[in-house]
Image (cartoon, rainbow, N blue to C red; front, side, top):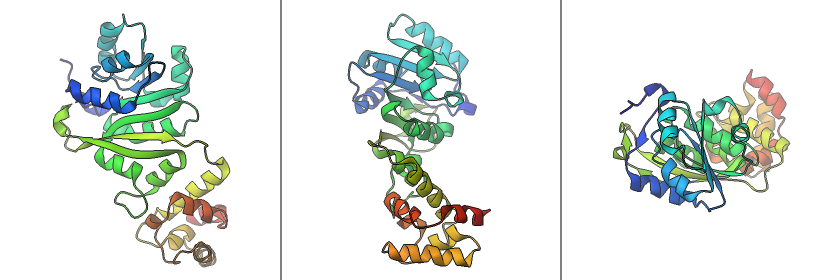
Length: 274
């Protein structure tokens, strides 16, 4: 047995029924392509290969990549590529396999890289029709949280700008080897269609990033930094949008940030933050 490597945050699924449940949650159709990050010992890969038209897996661990490739090399619908999935776009990985998007993202993600991988998956336009992934429960909560809920923050707003996120079910530590010290959750993310207009979206996200940089402050104080003039402008914009000028960032939704970004000088706010 190849030992798990801490450096890659490896926790492998050990129960076939758990892997099948995750694959079932992905609702794969026979004509769809599955994209798996970190197949590890193949717990998800095997049922994916039975369900999907074809499966592309990207594995950073050379020993596990070699073992899985030996096992599944005869499967005509399986391709394995070696490397760090974040080294290039998902579209480029598919192109290397000779396949075109869209695909369905299905992965038991390494804890130490789950957030950047999932963000890239939903932000990359046209590559994935949906994503189903295993992450820490706390991370799943942050992806899917709504204003005022536990875990709501900038990650929640950024995710909402690109996708609809919802936790599906939890997995106990005993579902993995080695067992992690936390509960895991399977989360689904479905890209927005149509996508938001990029300029307005990016302005709103820049504003949200400023608002969340100091959670103990009001949104107006966090956005305006040391500029009293800008703070008064932000407070007026908040009042015009129907909010108490002392509202905090975690009470504002993506739609609220989109509205505010249309009246607040985001460039001036970013300069004041430097």
